[in-house]
Image (cartoon, rainbow, N blue to C red; front, side, top):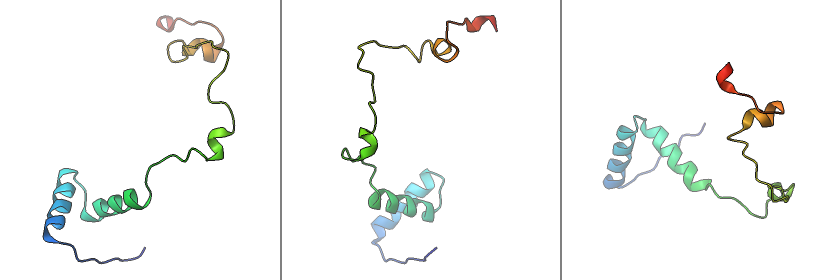
Length: 84
């Protein structure tokens, strides 16, 4: 790990301290998180081949209720979970 030092205005320091206190974190943790979020923005590149590798949805027009009938999807038939 590298040590980085920077002089910042008092107001920014107070904001950092408040954030650290509010989130029960150290100043180092808050500063690292801020740097990561600034340097590595959480965005999706729509040109990324990962998103074009396979269809994300079926084109059959049929809607599955996987979240509702997951036992049927997993075990191949409806199961009554109340029997267990």
